[in-house]
Amino acid sequence: MHKPSEWKIHALVLAMVVVSEFIGIKSFQVGPGKAILLPMLYALVIGFLMGPKFLKVVNLEEMKLATPFIGLSVMLLIAKYGTTIGPSIPLLLKAGPALILQEIGNFGTIVFAFPIAMLLGFGREAIGAVHSIAREGNLAIIADMYGLESPEGRGVMGIYICGTLFGAIFFGIMAGFFASLKIFHPYALAMACGVGSASMMAASSGALTAVYPAMAKEIQAFASASNLLTAADGVYASIFVAIPFTEWLYRKFGRKDNVTRAAQADLAAGREGN
Image 1 (cartoon, rainbow, N blue to C red):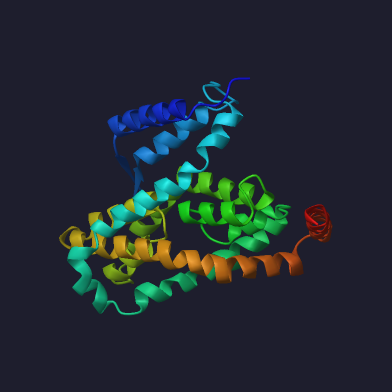
Image 2: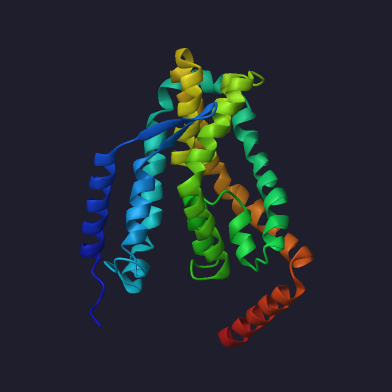
């Protein structure tokens, strides 16, 4: 068996980026909202089709070799966010603690999603799946704490893929719907766009600017700042609050057979380490 080549991975990624950017951003109206398809979605679908189950352009060894590059991509993405915030710092400061405290909303994800995961028969996959909306930063955290080959890693990766495929469409529709209700201030809706995902933020903020075209710059500034802060303080919220809370929920309310098997596996791993 030949050794996996990083050059092949880089070449395939470059080809996927070129094709995806050539297709460009596509948007369409869905009810009161606007769904936006971004190049990242095309790249994900193309990469999926290249896998061992379909075109077999890459094998499992090459897929594992590509895993560490996720962290590097996340750093470049966060740096890009920062360039959109600087000119609007005075406006953002007026928002006060609202931008910081919005991370509390992450508990809603856990409280609503955990019971559903249990009903679906999830094991420890639930910890990776429900502790957040599972974007790039969360992938890195779960990979570091548990490994992407673990049940928790499979959980977070599954939600990441579903979020990439359907999240942008869902958030675009939801943002347009809430904007059409005229209940919330556009700045509040813009802050809500920053859930830690570039594609979801772009789709939802794009729908908002379609409703409030005169406030397009302000909406983009608030959405980008919110997204950046969510990616930043969301790391600490996940490590110190969300994951321990989800672990506790799983030990307390998880299926007893799954919890027992997980405890036995942890005990066996500890014995091997000694």
